[in-house]
Amino acid sequence: MAIKEGEGVVYDKTGTIGRVVRLLEMDGKVWAEIDSTGLLYDVNVLEPASVATVEKKREEEEKEEEKERKKREGMKRPAGVEEMKDEGTLDSSAGICGAG
Image (cartoon, rainbow, N blue to C red; front, top):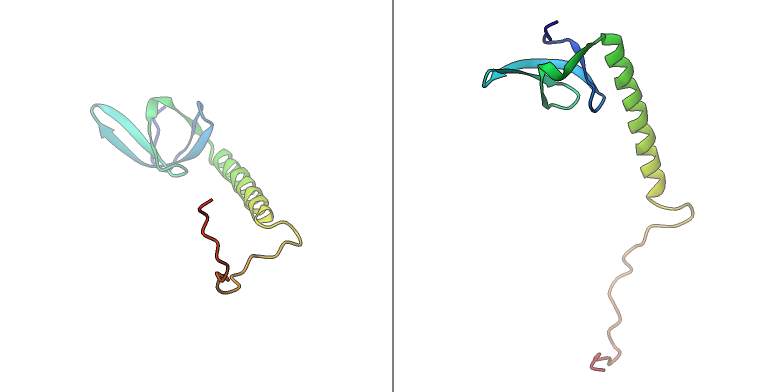
């Protein structure tokens, strides 16, 4: 079965799922650009997937990304810790030379 533009596909080696944006022929091979990665895949290594499968996978990935984003935001600053602020200039009136 030939892969067509707009069709949902799966790259089984990595589980990458997406829709074919365009097909290109280079050096006697046909390549498919996948919307989810922007990468080209040899059409011989892609498997057709239903649109429902593509959408379900995309929803799962978006939920996971949202979860990771919330996790990162929560890790930025521990609770009760205020942001450090610049309090002006340093007091350099001491005669320290650091010579040892």
